[in-house]
Length: 282
Ligand code: PAF
Image (cartoon, rainbow, N blue to C red; front, side, top):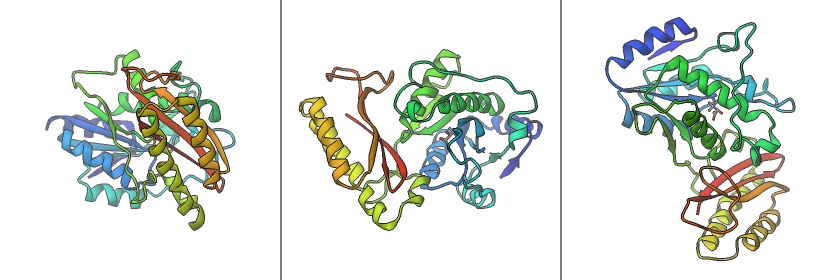
């Protein structure tokens, strides 16, 4: 496994790897957990080689979000990725990614607004910008992203269509199903911030989401189901709810009646000061 930290060695490495067949990219910010490893395993099934980028992207952190505190553990991450058969790690520093004078931002309209876009202004511009740069740097045949960050996936898919990133590979932006703990809680690096009590209570989120999503699929009124869902979340120990909404799975437009287009229940709620997000298909 090679580790590139500058663009020129990266380009030579990816050029050589592409000779063997399709190259898959798994973009990450490091601090890897089983959810990331599931992306790597899905990538290995689809490509001859897998490259993983590890870059804590300052442009997707808000002023009130602690970029300095984000865990950085390249040695541990590299050992995990080597064991998974990854061929290349792309680990630029901030200067290699955004050199002096850097001035370009990618803003994807529509899907970036609302939901997490309200609580984290500018976050999806930062994500879109770095993901487009990663595509240009690594030039993968496909890239894999977790469905847990559904809005992020929707933003990247919209950008890929709008900026012609979709190439000959039919599934160049590939979403991978959320990996969950035994009690249903979606894996996230933020789960580590939960106390033991809050961690136990947090299992109410996927349980109540499943109940709400089944009720809506069975025809129960959407507005009333979402109101009951929010009340139940607060009763289960969540202190606040940023949103709990039914949205079109692609455009993220609000859905007030179920139609033929796929819909998604999307939730962000706080417990013990930690903001958890999750989503389920209807
Ligand atoms: O999901 C993440 O870890 C990040 O948002 C991504 C896609 C690697 C961009 O920095």
